[in-house]
Length: 268
Ligand SMILES: C[S@@+](CC[C@H](N)C(=O)[O-])C[C@H]1O[C@@H](n2cnc3c(N)ncnc32)[C@H](O)[C@@H]1O
Image 1 (cartoon, rainbow, N blue to C red):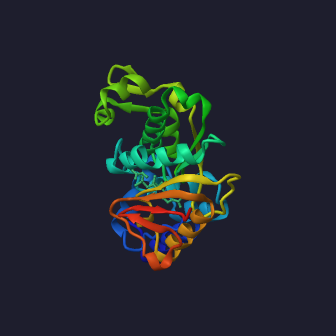
Image 2 (image 1 turned 60 degrees about the vertical axis):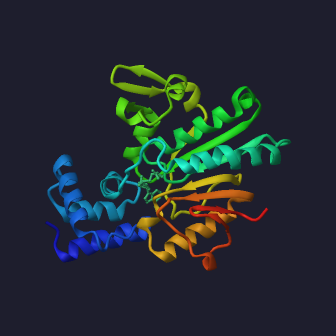
């Protein structure tokens, strides 16, 4: 069980480096760290935290964020967003980018991969045979190394891919008994990277679509609106930002135009 001072130290660290506010999550922090220490053989909190504080890129820091992030996700979560992408966003972009044939899509808190793979399936389906003529970059990023490794592997249990249409299961997965592996042709459309949303954006090109779903709930308002401003600057005019269905943005604090709940757009 962490003392008050130890709990405050963890909360401060995670807030400063990752923007995540755990100040009201004492039970979660206690439980997750206890398990992490047990599984990894750490017995001194002081030693662990000192290492994490000294080396931000080290194993302790990565382990800490792996342990403390909540990575819940599933295929076709908030399905209406993918329908909107298929019916409204992609038809618009297909016309708009007819000459460049270039599309940048970012799943900015991609967790174990269900969201970016779903994006890739929607895009593949939409372009069909024309896909080869389009340069569709789907970038999937997350701060947790553990979930990224899972995403890169692209192996899911049968019950996890159950929500997907049969045709997608056949087209985009290879069945190995109880497990389904994402086919290489689909994987090739994605780039997975570890990226902290608090950092400066290193991207060379702007995005047409950004999915930033179910991550802002962990940030306080200052962090959240600073991030939204950064994303705005890295979006193409007319580009769409999709946030989680239970999240919201105050229209007086953003440059994006409101389209409908959880869907925003940069002015054309
Ligand atoms: C609940 S999951 C959301 C997954 C997916 N977007 C969805 O809606 O199903 C939230 C993810 O945000 C990631 N995350 C939290 N803070 C982050 C940060 N500062 N930078 C990048 N990713 C972060 C976590 O590691 C976690 O995988």
